[in-house]
Amino acid sequence: MTTATPGGDEVTGPANDQSTAGAQEQAPLDFDTSKPNIARVYDFLLGGKDNFAADRVVGDQIKLVLPQVHLGVQAQRAVLRRAIRYLVIEAGIRQLIDIGSGLPTAGNVHEVAHAIDPQVRVVYTDNDPVVLAHARALLANNPTTTVADGDLLQPEQLLKQPVLRHLIDLDRPVGLLLCGIMHYLNDQEDPGGIIARLMALLPSGSHVFLHHLVKAGTPGEEAAEAALRKGIGRGTFRTPDQVAAFLTGLDLVPPGVVRVPDWRPDPDDHPSDDPVLNLAVAALARKP
Image (tube, rainbow, N blue to C red; front, side, top):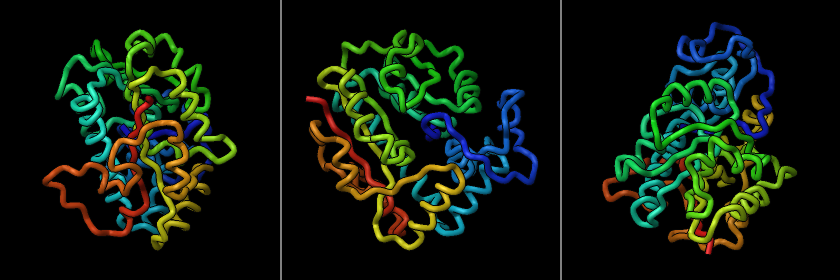
């Protein structure tokens, strides 16, 4: 699963052709397909079918300035899998919360975790109706995994939801996944403060995994940021130091805040040297 726009706000964009069949089947009857959403834009960039014309317009604008953007999206999926394996195998975490989970794709969080231990409990949270419909259908008969309708901008309410609390024991360590979501919070929404508020509700030994778009001097990055802001009204590329500051007070797990391909790569990884892979960092931190 990928990510969704926080706060539930979607900005109207152009739509000039029919919705794809996959997305149309899952959309509520009163759903406005003219409003793009980052979860469905990501689905389009991954080659999925659960997106609408407005989402493809934004995706095409990003691909125009970053032709290899799919490499970055694939790298995001890969580093998330590595983080899950670390959390379950090395940190011994048995509860995962994926905030802004987005649309299902290959290697979902619960699939990666359950390949290691089928008893790991996973809760996805999102606020996009198409995402929620997909996830509920996918997880209907899964006793250890569920989805909750939640807003990242209201962290206390999000973690208090009965659906989430049914599976997650907040007295035991939790792995919090913020993969590709915090760069959609504007500075005035205090993304660092949001993370601090979330972690304040979790016990010692909990971890937070963070993937964030960054300023790297890569050709096309400013235009890509502008395309996101124009298309969905959000998108802030920050410096690695700014991202690291979001984790103040937590213990960084080595190798710290690094380029996505450099975060605990698998032995057989052979990442591309395309500069698009410089546009995001990953980090994992533990609450002491």
